[in-house]
Length: 161
Image 1 (cartoon, rainbow, N blue to C red):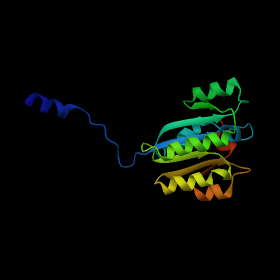
Image 2 (cartoon, rainbow, N blue to C red):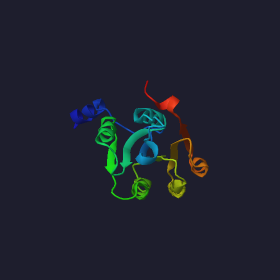
Image 3 (cartoon, rainbow, N blue to C red):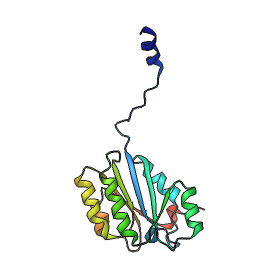
Image 4 (spheres, one colour):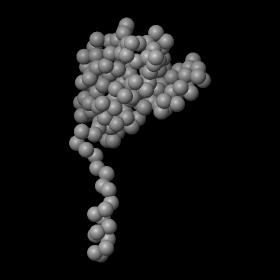
């Protein structure tokens, strides 16, 4: 027993620091991944890593998404989700799963739609921090005000040179 006790002293113990939080991100692909916004998913990851560790990163897409877009999403470490019906409905379902996932501390939604404001409120009621990432024009004021943190992006701060 003496040897085992000394062996344990040398094992690194991985523990969650008080400031470490797990982030679940859902991206409204048809609404946010538009040429006029010129958004870069790597930039989004960097922004979110200031708040915690990105554990879930899904981009919801409709049937019109190109193979090139899907490949770019995968190459940036995101999981593409092809949705046959309404992307907003599937995004709401995915958000509920993150809200009730005990391993996720922060719900991050990348969208401009006011329809997701009730989800933000439900997440907060269930002890989750909330982040909304959007772009102008058309970023819902109600959605901005509902979240704990709001990030408003434009092409100047998110495009690759």
